[in-house]
Image 1: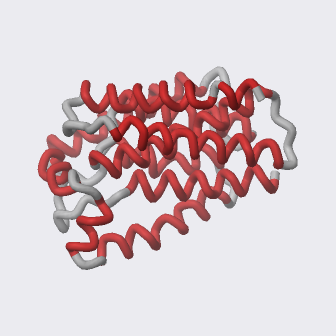
Image 2 (image 1 turned 90 degrees about the horizontal axis):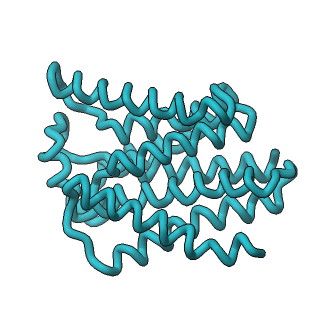
Length: 231
């Protein structure tokens, strides 16, 4: 019960951190209502995982349940931020990556244990930055660091279990449909910053910015809830 009393504080702090990182990264101007929307996204992600853990077949300790729930909060927060701004700042993505590795460690399917999760997370984050730098130098620019990390998260969380390929398969359909919709529908769904993000990043291709983070992270969260419920 005490944990749920602190839930508003936890989600507000996460949302405030995400919006602060957007300002630091020189992102688009935000409205006051964005803090409320970001907080709601984080709260839904946190509460969904925490409730599923409570009804799941595997008993987790209090700190373990909080750690799993924080990943849910970060996943939906990053998905909302990407929808709102068409970009997820490094300070938020790094937290998401480390939280995903901690989740994999708690599930027993990740590549490393709890202690090494922050170390591997930082290494993978730097690797994604290096990959983006290589794309900028050599071309073409296809996958930004947040997209690279999001696409790697299923295997970092679920390891070599069948949940990882299921996540990738489920996300492919909405991605393909999304990119083939009529352009006015695409603009409406993608958000107001989509065109600017494509130009700023210098992405090559159709000129459309694929909503990788929102689709991958919401799909990943859904599969995670299923995994936690079934054990």
